Image 1 (cartoon, each protein chain N blue to C red):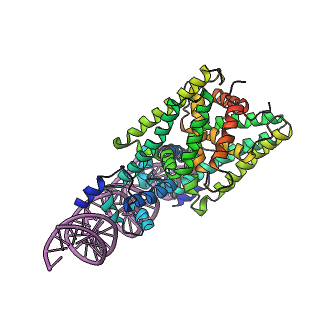
Image 2: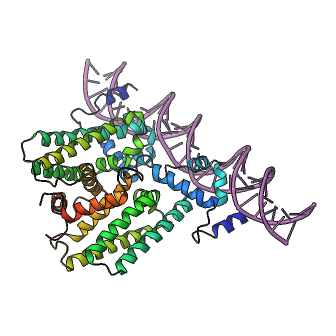
Image 3: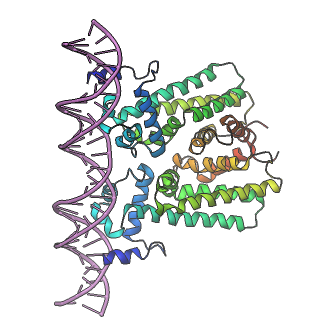
Length: 206
Length: 206
DNA sequence: TACCCTACCAAGCAATTGCTTGGTTGGCTG
DNA sequence: CAGCCAACCAAGCAATTGCTTGGTAGGGTA
């Protein structure tokens, strides 16, 4: 109760490696693996070695757990995109950098990316998660800006439907989270470079 | 009971446009929209205008509904892939044809594709759906064969990791189901052609 | 008329769900 | 030593879930 309130007070600040953060990690893993609704509070508690009721000492609902997980992750990711857009790389390098940063996110924040990918549609049915739609719009803006800049600079084809191309890139990048496993045969950077090679040059023989 | 049995006897044969087929359509729509587990038998019954218990006159479980939906769809799809592989088109045309057929499936069987895409992982946790893993393997074989044939014939780049390329294609094609809506601005054929253009030639300016 | 069969209803049961409540424990602090 | 507080337990409640049971309406058939 009073404990609840004081714990609630540090939702994101300088991540104190507390039990709270630990529980969020565990929950994220389960949400990513089985889906938000398919994960019960008892699943989370079991994985943490406590009883389900004890979770409510740290969080006030299952929803607020995903909420915190997604907010934290997105702040970091979109911060990186903004840095790229505001940076002084040339258009092609900016696009490459955005792809690289995305694959890095898949590597470093697997669970969070998976949750955003798989559960956003469902979560959007709650008012509380309306901000996810904003993030989607923001994502589209980021990539369209990158693409337009590239076309204007003459480094990208000018005969493509940019909105379609945006979806193509977004999809190919993020679905990788469904099969990529850190520590596998290829590093995320290698994968990103191959993806970029296909995306930019195509798979047809020159 | 006895009615049950006789209804169960025509699970796939020459689709008689019965109430049964109608209910499967309704269920497929809901499974695709909200997910299998997130769809309750009461949801399905409501959408059909009957009571939930009445569904069990037609089917013996919620699972057997998805089962039938997926089996029927996959038989058709993989039949088409086999026709392409066994056909006499040149390597590049075969690859293009496979992509076109896939987008056609997205157009004609939205729900089924979405279910296979989103629920396969979950369904695979049941023995009953082990065949979905076989279908995944089969899909990989189909695309890898197409790619290898293309490389050998010299129409595709030979410096790419084929397994990675396979995933790239599979992902880009199937995720489209998450945003494509029939009757939209572009036909599925137009979208397929643009995708092929990007995939084969890349987005960089020549 | 007697029968059957398809398609449904009405009611409810057992299991699972998210969450609540009141209490206990053990370490830290004044 | 007294008090506090984060972290947890034990028990349970109301709602929702998949599915069962016994029955009925109505059209076709013999």
